[in-house]
Length: 251
Ligand SMILES: [Fe+2]
Ligand SMILES: [Fe+2]
Image 1 (cartoon, rainbow, N blue to C red):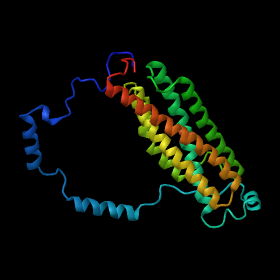
Image 2 (cartoon, rainbow, N blue to C red):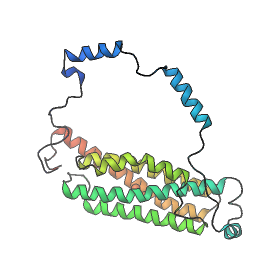
Image 3 (spheres, helix red, strand yellow):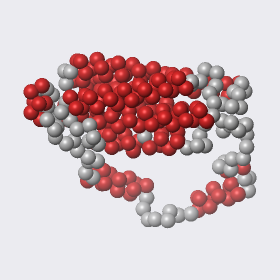
Image 4 (tube, rainbow, N blue to C red):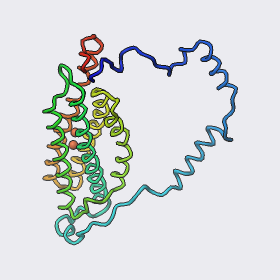
């Protein structure tokens, strides 16, 4: 950050009620005395949610594979039962998340260039390297989906979900007001999800008895674990320097 102003510096913040010794207790009292603007109770709300959850249709379904005959030949065991559908759904999830991962690193690179790093913090070289890893992961999943006779442009149910889940991460990192460290906190969430997602794909490849796939997924998983641990180390170092008062104003 180029201005001598950091989020942890003391300045005006009016969110705390203790700031106003007179209006604070009055607000609490008014909240106690007021009644909800709509009828019903918490129990009734929970009951309504339960009814909706019981009656709602799924978010989406898996389409049948494009090349069913080809798949039958090569992956006879795969398409029996739910295994094929589960694997393709989760591959679709990772495809969507890895694409988002590239965009997250694009935004992080811009933020690093606009602001600054810290001792033991991210370098442009590392961010570019990690961005390249995410792009390679996307390409890997794309190749595997085509190989399995699936359409990589399909938004699978899990891909749909992960798109909604990651909205907050993109918003955090793309917000010009967030610092590089705050943006990396959002990236830490992405990397935790990435590592868990690839771990699950390794397991699923084993379930469908596709050992060559499992080996390729394990390599991607190892990279995600490296991303995750690196981002956590950057953030811990930033917090340490900030707490010790040794952080440069530029970071
Ligand atoms: Fe990735
Ligand atoms: Fe990653």
